[in-house]
Amino acid sequence: MAAVTMRLPVVRAPLDSSAPRGGEKHLVAPGDTITTDTGYMRGHGTYVEEDKLIASVAGVVERVNKLVCVRALKARYNGEIGDIVVGRITEVQQKRWKVETNSRLDSVLLLSSINLPGGELRRKSAEDELAMRDYLQEGDLISAEVQSVFSDGAVSLHTRSLKYGKLAQGVLVQVSPSLVKRQKTHFHDLPCGASVILGNNGFIWIYPTLEQKDDEAGGYTANLEPVPLSDREVISRLRNCIMALVTHKIMLFDTSILYCYEASLPHQIKDILKPEVTEEIVLEARQRLLDLEG
Amino acid sequence: MASVVLSEAEKLYILHGVQEDLRVDGRGCEDYRCAEVETDVVSNTSGSARVKLGETDILVGIKAEMGTPKLEKPDEGYLEFFVDCSSNSPELEGRGGEELGTDIANTLYRVFSCENSVDLKSLCINPKEHCWVLYVDVLLLECGGNIYDAISIAVKAALFNTRIPKVRVLEDEEGTKEIELSDDPYDCIRLNVDEVPCIVTLSKIGYRHVVDATLQEEACSLASLLISVTSKGAITSMKKVGKGSLDPESIFEMMETGQRVGKSLHIALQKILDEEERLGTSRPKVGFLG
Image (cartoon, rainbow over all chains, first blue to last red; front, side):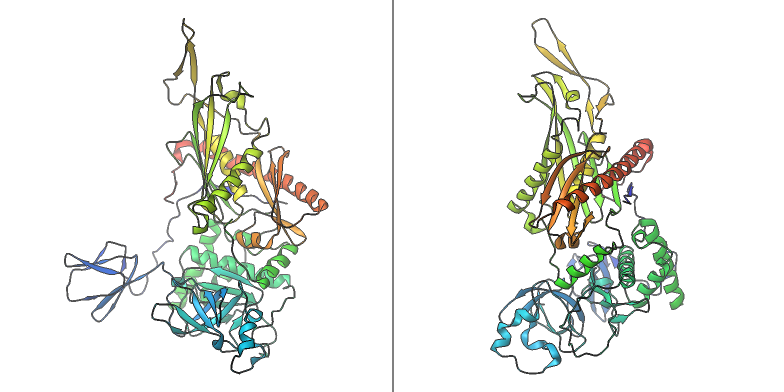
């Protein structure tokens, strides 16, 4: 039975912000004066006009001693060493792959920075260079860690650990990088039955939890068996919950996603994206998060 | 068409999901995403509508202008379609977007070529001399998959919203005809949109077909069938797109699904248009600042 729902648009009101928030953030819009004190050094996102420090982007003011800068809320991903990212291969070049990670420049994955299938450790030869496309093709998704940042801002990745590598069956959700909270680990096995990788660049990968934990594969053999329906439902529900959290600009980390998932259980999966249901479950998740903090 | 690149494993996941009637966002194979429809968003047009279907965002504006009727149909007005896709990704700017735009415009001409979809005789003022020409401009603001369906919904909503001023033809002694516009700005004719068809796109993924495919699902489907269906379930035109092939049996199945889904689509759309009409000026206009 076909289900077609249409509605008239409604002005989306921001969520009820009566809950007290610890530590007031100084939010600015482009053109807002940050300070008129001339003793500060200006950093990124600011400029000086008529002895006033004015913001040039919309974001949060960050002050480190005498340096004032504005961190934009909606910006491309800026790589930092040690970040976990999920990327998509866009090009196969001579000794490296170009990876798209939602940053200003395509990231680079050198042939010498990957683990070969089977976990062998050897120097890559000319045959390996010719067989690059057998390992990673255009369109493939990988999870990797940032090894270094070039002077122009481009990021160099590496997959030199058995937990990184090519990703198999699952769902990719693209969000703004500023919504992913920095944590100790970004690989989570959620108790609801699926696993999630929260890439710092805003690419979130949801996939069915692998049963066997042995790492002989090294991340290259893709499991092409059909995923069971129960796992699919969990993955779809998680995907919709993440979209709901993103709509209301809630920070994404394992606890917030889990709370949102639990709040959404009474509803059908496809109803989660309806505006009124989204608001209801996000409010409940936010309440639980505040109770956790307080 | 703007498309995303997917890995083989992702495509396989989507394919298996469709076979089990559970798509990535939890919908069934015959479910549409939630659509938002608003009419009368552009003030200097005769009729306009904006439709948001998931990520896809379409704006349609209709301007009624006076012109001469076509030679083969002297007592009818006509519609002209123009589609602009340039506000999308860089690959659709300039010539790339033009190809897609002409494609969509030709599809719309074909869909509306059916004789009784719009009452063209009511658009005639003076046979052989004057008639109303409706210039339908479609703007593709954001492409999130399934643009044909969204465009046809927006065109129907805009036609429902179109108000054409009433004119009278005065003939004086010498035989020269003068056209007089009515003084009252609210005195206008509305079009009957009961027979206007809507396009339903059925994308074949694996062995099954889905309605309202997202960009990811479109990347997995090799062939799609565009069916234009009226509110009574009559199919007015059909077009196959994509480089894959379709089995005749699956075409029959897709046609049946298209008729079923098309009827539900019309019912939902008419309900929303009637509700908007009923609320009239008491509804706060959202427009582009929502």
